[in-house]
Length: 466
Image 1 (tube, rainbow, N blue to C red):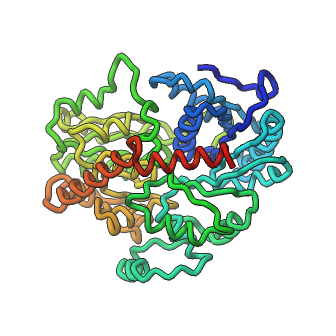
Image 2 (tube, rainbow, N blue to C red):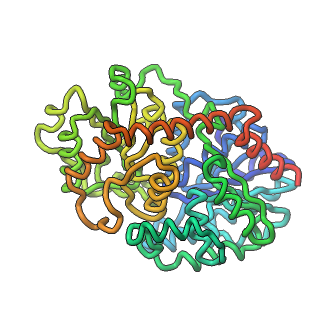
Image 3 (cartoon, one colour):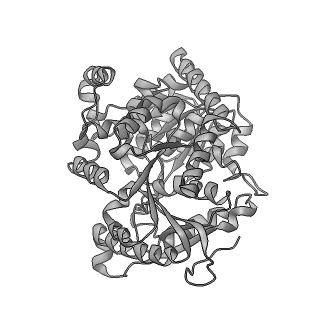
């Protein structure tokens, strides 16, 4: 695969060039990366503008997948920020410097195309406002959160009548997450800023219309200046070749699953940015052991990969220690995987019957698309709202612990109960069946001629023809 890091050399005048501007945290990179590959498959040059360390991770991923001929249209533009103590310790300053680099590169790109299309993570708006000096650009705001969450937050600044939603909030009482406990005190200000940014030509949601249609329709009705809203996803299914394995050796977790009965294993993982305390790890281990169900548990060593500059460091706190004798006691029915596992392949395996998750939206989309119910354990930002959506709206999951008690250590008994409920009760089986029904709808929608495929083609048409 050709990877071009120089923008000023070897660029020819193109009708359209797309610049992808992600928020530089792991959970935000993947959807835009998959969207980049899909756009590139339409013979459109795509430049992925991100920190060098993040692009390095994505390049490594491409070494392990079956690549398309059109992947040559995908170019990684490595960005650097000053290596000063001030920049490394001040997140806002780092993002300001990153924003300056992005605007500079976009200016260069704009000289080599009749139209520069910029698809940016909505969180980057504050840092890329200098783009307004570039002629002939079209900007699209990408949201990595669910349409349900975007709808809830939009109601903070727009009057939307919704008796069903108000009833749900009333029923949940203290268990309905507050903005202060999730996004913090400045969310309303940010939403208003985004709505007032005049460069936006459209909104792109990382979602699926079949189960978020109500919220997508409302977002479209209340969008500024009748701005179009696209629902694009799930990207891992639309871009069928992405992450399809081309390795000679399968991951050991998949070999473990091959030996198990259908729907007999619960997959436990809390994402790439969540690290459990040692005390909490001990409780998870005890809960899984006492449940007597088969499991695959991804244990992340304590680190901080949320937003670094260039070193992609492994953090300071070291390796998480499992209870003495734990792996020996659960040997044969449980597997511990350190730091990384092929999540999508695990969720898609017939032996996987449940997912204990932090309920990040990427993980939710993957689990739903594979027909796997969720035991939700949210940590921050949109995850508590995703839990409400999974549990109370779609009814394909349960809560491991109450959000109102989030500061407490979740005890082993609660973890054991959640596993048993999801994996071994009629209630859990009903959730599994509903998840499978949603999965089938998604598969039909992303097939050629399906609704999701048509919506993606509509977006491609908009960025190339209008």
